[in-house]
Image (cartoon, rainbow, N blue to C red; front, side, top):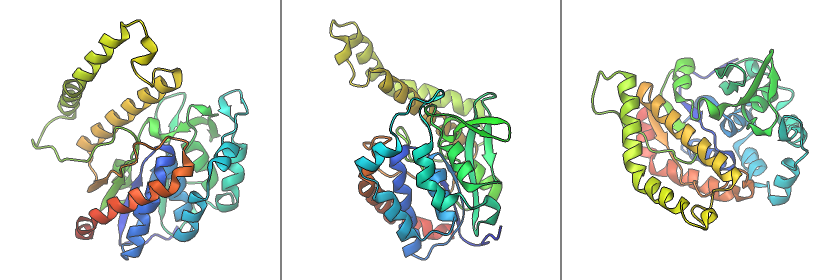
Length: 306
């Protein structure tokens, strides 16, 4: 691998179709002549990061992402009722194979790594070697949707489960400056802790307390409404899928905030894409523009990082 020694390191987060906002960030960086020397990603962040690191032009990458209409989405995620997931990976592999199937991570011109989770041990898995397509396939294996990926004897699933925006791993592997891009629901802008010298357990306890205090009125309202006769109307997301998605959102949000306290990025960009559904890839242009606007607003600060 031949890596450029100048430029920023990007940590691209998980979030399904919202991740097309990553391309808006990249478009602004490229337009302004700000080099990217390494990228690490979880889930959709790994997929976009791999395509970018492969040498594909940004214009081609944007076209590839934004040409996915609702018909293509259905074809990619058509239920096949595999034994370990709602769909098999046939459509996704056919979509990515021409671009990533013939490449290895070691051959990239910029640094690249993907995050996955070991389904058996629960540990974070850092993928830095081997076939680029297999790395992406492991990182995007959303439990229940895609079957786990078998890599080097491990059963791997979506990296967002353990590290939704891997800015801490980005710094460990490639140094700084590190810009994280968070597109998952519940992501908040990074603020440096005011008190120095706190143990991470103190930070975690404080985060949990603040989170409960902020959400208590909503929690109380939901508890009251659940007791009503028409329980299904208490919250539109009370279907099984909605409950699962909400639980995942809470987990990712808390994981990212804890990692911010321990090993923060130099900058965290949070494009306003929360209203885009995980599989709404046909809204790619919307996500792209949201990422672009977010990067443009922060350009002066981005330039100071260099």
